[in-house]
Length: 177
Image (tube, rainbow, N blue to C red; front, top):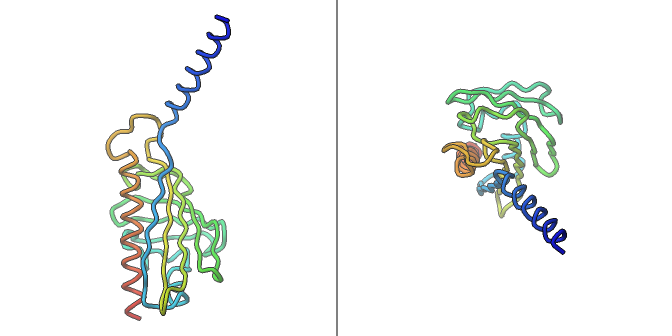
């Protein structure tokens, strides 16, 4: 009986330690905006994977390896400095959807996330459109006890800021046409 109790104690300790050692959890941010323009008009502004600088305020320039073909890698140079490499997973003109992910983890000072992916989808909403940006990532510092600026709060703030500013600018651009 003591042997069984010892085995159970060891198993519970190991399970508890493994769960504690995991680190951060994947964070998800969903932002949306309604735009007084047709889904096709909005799609025309964002469909070019290599033209993110045209509508994303944080982006200074973009170089895409293979245009808007799945697998295309774009190097996004940010206005505040730093470069992020992203891969186009899917672009669907019929559903007005773009899915991409960060290819190589960015410098935490540039974009404090790890394993970032995003989906931008445009749907009809009344006489206009609704654009929804869903992003998900882990915090930049994946082990336990992250330093300030590399924790879940920083990851959520970075994803929220990127999507909110970009969607607000997209709305302004689409509605002035």
